[in-house]
Length: 361
Ligand code: B12
Ligand code: SF4
Ligand code: SF4
Image 1 (cartoon, rainbow, N blue to C red):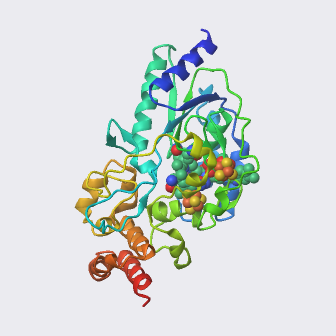
Image 2: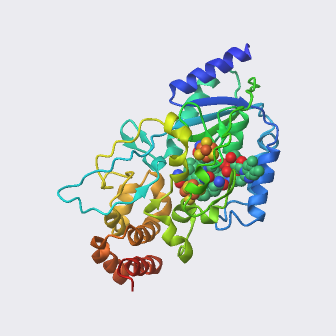
Image 3: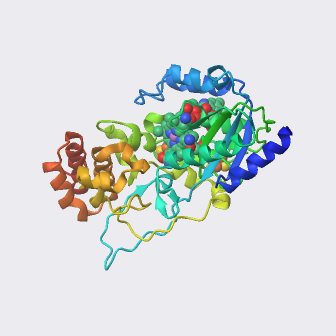
């Protein structure tokens, strides 16, 4: 079998399936990324994510050891649309107090908002099925985000892109607005060289982070990252970080939005027809609406999307803080209702904080 030809066909197939970039690397351990990840755990930078363990890092860094049949890893990058700077107008006076959802939660498939984990898993499986028709007895194992793999390190070594100083992998095809997946396969596809590109002298993203979470080039203190605070963190958000979180209610894109490479390479921005989440996540959500959802409403709107991860109370907590930061008195009645009657004390407390921000007492 001509493996170089097969690899070219894999790349072509991946592109047809919608991936913006692909590459191949070996199963040799990812020793440098392992060292960075263990250092992050030891320094406490991953505190609060109890699922991110040393065992997980050790296993993630050695896919070849875990799957002795694996001969190469196909790395894949899926593009998603960033939020545009335009915000929707919701009627006369436009009284809606809007926040932000990170653009990746608005990932679309055929006009429907989907959880990218499901979408990428489905496309990876389609690629494996196609490859299985060409390689007899093919074995494969896919990894999408919560799979035990160091997604960025795999993408870098396979030449899919390079890691910026904000840590995200930047591709030529779509900037850093890509989500990563990889597939270990039992066929030894020829490997690609890592990208020789880099940030050069640019440091724009570092001061763009409002919480100071980019503590050194490529190094994120997750405890300070708004993405961690709004998605992964359980319980009350530390007081000193709340005023720095702006109006982000789920995730954060600021370091990516600051990046000049994204200004040139990002996909076309998302359409912003509405601020209502009635039909799922939107880039500029109505914060009052999201604060006051019932459990059933939260499930109906966000089931099958990445926002489901926070649960209703997590999203309501984030919205209460975002409303405090938005500085618009129109939110006071809703915050007062939540402070008085939300079933969750973490939300009630965040609502009291939001009220104090708006009223000064
Ligand atoms: C834990 C996690 C988080 C945590 C911690 C983030 C972090 N930087 O570690 C939190 C919740 C904060 C988070 C946030 C986000 N995440 Co996240 N996250 C992960 C996860 C599950 C593990 C990451 C990990 O192992 N981190 C450990 C650190 C040490 O490694 P790393 O960042 O992966 O890799 C870099 C570091 O090792 C860095 N490095 C570390 N130390 C040092 C030291 C030196 C000297 C140097 C040079 C480099 C260096 O070099 C590597 C390449 O950049 C991965 C999925 C996966 N299974 O890999 C997704 C993943 C990294 N996240 C992703 C995304 C999209 C995000 C957000 C953009 C979401 C959002 N919009 O809100 C933000 C971005 C924040 C940021 N600037 O990194 C994507 C990244 C896609 C891309 N283009 O790179 C991934 C790969 C998920 C996916 N499959 O698509 N995330
Ligand atoms: S995602 Fe936001 S909070 Fe996290 S490092 Fe980037 S700018 Fe900072
Ligand atoms: S803003 Fe500059 S330093 Fe940061 S990732 Fe982009 S190019 Fe690199």
